[in-house]
Image (spheres, rainbow, N blue to C red):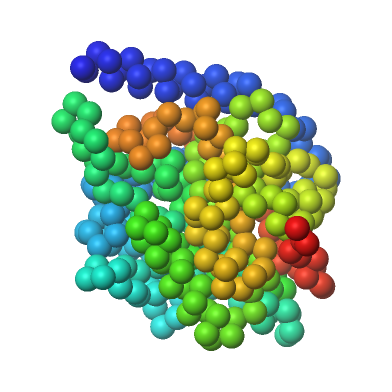
Amino acid sequence: MRKNRLFNRFNAMFLVFFTTLACTGQTDKNPDIVKAEVSKNEVQDDLKYLSSDELMGRKTGTKGIEDAAVFIENKFKDFGVEPYFETYRDNFMINDIQGFNIVGYVEGNDPELKDEFIIIGAHYDHIGTGKEVEEDTIANGANDNAAGTVGVIQLAKHFANSENKRSILFALFSGEEMGLKGSKHLAEKLKEEGLDLYVMFNLEMIGVPMKAKDYRAYLTGFEKSNLAEKFNEYSEGEQILGFLPQAQQMSLFRRSDNYPFFEVFNVPSQTVSTFDFSNYPYYHHVDDESEFLNAEFMASLIEDLIPGLRKMANTGDKEIKMTNE
């Protein structure tokens, strides 16, 4: 059994390495775009902690997710990202289980546009335990979704020190694995408060590069808005976001935390992902660990998301719109 597991781990590491080589140089960098630098080491360190055995799979209602929440809160404090509510925590109940989203806030600097909001989100919970493999039962959830959580943390770090006309909420959701409970709660709460939501931009499973694609990541619900088109335009024509047929076939648009915001606000609310069903074998598996992810790729992808998000936060008009299907 141990030999089989080591062999499977070797295959997974080889797959990540091969995919990285195959993707290197797919998209030439445009020298006219000033890219923010995202530290590979910071990405690796945060990813390693959030998917460590110490956090026991970050199941909602456990000490592990409490520790993850404190970690995120401390990051936000260090960056100067303010709590949106009285504290960073947005509490809710799932039957008798206490859940809480973490919500940070960077206020826009335009007297009018600051009342319009972009939400950059990801779920930070996971399933806790999984099918035992060689006495290991901890489902660490590195790609799902410590990777997206790290992406939000790094974007919060950047935009905390950036001049933006619109306001930005950085939302880390719990209860996703229990049926999108955290995002449903927050969407309904913000709607009741009259929040003017422009775009909800969600990150999910961004830990390894895609195979043989001419874009960096795919967008769920691709056809529902012009988000990918405008985002690539904002990125000076670089193909950052693309269409993955399997995402449409498997209704991934409805299966992550973007969906409650689409339902409640009826505005562009979509998920960015690089899990293409062939580049990572450990979905909801105890071997979904940080050693199989590619921190260098993640740092590069996060850097590539910044120009589009920056432009989104600063255009005079709401240029990203729903399409008529």
